[in-house]
Image (cartoon, rainbow, N blue to C red):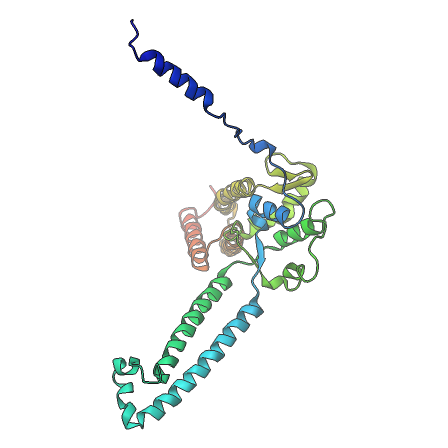
Length: 312
């Protein structure tokens, strides 16, 4: 292939432009080389970001209540002043239209805005803030309280000489220690847990973790481990499934060998009570659901008695 008259020039220009282009000094970011968070609030924030069960904060009930009370008092004062001004203007023939015609109320006077309208605008601004804070406060009360296990875990981390090392001093330490009932949890990992799962997680698992760690915990820091909620819930769920499948069968098995009608009826009463207790412990069923399940089980037992009057 023959070269055109301008090809050598183009190649030279391209070569010179590439040679003159500055080499990039930006290196790929190595995520593995990131430094660990420093001691103090950065380390605490990293812990909360790693495990949501440590997301425990203070609600500041007293301060929120004071803020609402002060706004309420300001609104009450503005309301009183507005009513007094409305009564005074209603008896003034020059201000008669202020109570029946809003545009007359909005019309400025030679001295400036109408005094009554100024109060209306002040009330509008205050009541908007008041209603907004009132709804926010109501949402705060809906947040669940942290479990005793989570509070103790956070307190232990803060005071441990290897992790938190007690970096919180007065008055900042009061955020967690002043009033335990003022704390809320942002994580809902235990909100829908049944009593058995909570007992299994808080009582039985610490004993298990003293000797074993397989499958239920992960390491956050050197020597610091947290339990995997999914693994614990899976184990508790499997135990619940086994018990729920054995209970009805056990009642039918026992009734098969009981020949006395009176003893059979007493057994049905006792087993129904045991069944409802197990439902309350092993599930999150409501009272209506527990009552319906107990009635269904008792009906099955009565039908079995009617069709099997005696042992063959």
